[in-house]
Amino acid sequence: MRYPFSRIALPYDYSDLEPYIDTETMHYHYDKHYKTYVNNLNKALEKYPGLQKFTLEQLLAMPRMDPAILKNGGGAYNHGLYFSGMAPAGRANGPQGQLLYLIERGYGSFEGFKKVFNRVALNVFGSGYAVLAVTAGGRLSIVPLKNQDTLRGRGLTPLVCVDVWEHAYYLKYKNQRAAYLENIWNVIDFPIL
Ligand code: MN
Image 1 (cartoon, rainbow, N blue to C red):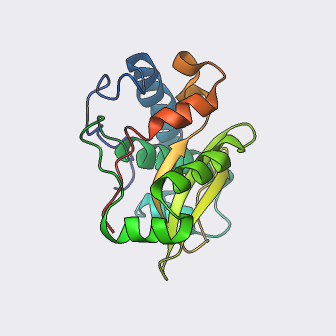
Image 2: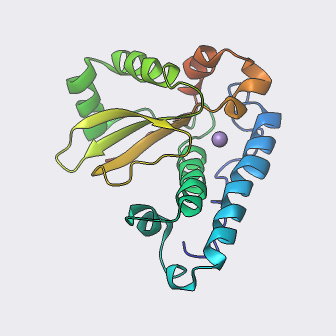
């Protein structure tokens, strides 16, 4: 995907993640918050015709990038990961194969992994994300990100990205981020490594 950027298509309907992610939150989150980052990224790129040929990943990996492109590009990228990484409960895949092996080796069990991940996600102070990522050598890492930071320059590939900005859960869960994090595993769709 290149300039002008657009949102990833939702691979499910707004109501399909109920009761874990409510329909109203999905509308605000996908149609307002996510869209605003994508629009502002395109606006920031208007004045850099030379950058318009690059993919979002390439833009985010460049040194000395305009902060407006990093911030809005990060918002566009992180929301793309988040929304594409979920599926309706019952259709969402748990970790399997190589990824399950790495999770069990690194965290003892899937349950143990979720505990560690949720602790990291709960401890993101203010707004941000928690990301499960893998190194080129196959080591898993759970990374807290602030605001719209990304994994740029860290040599990590994101596998699961959970949005812990209040707008991701406040309408349904109010200030209970922990309850949102408990429930979200019902709709996280793990990739196949
Ligand atoms: Mn968000």
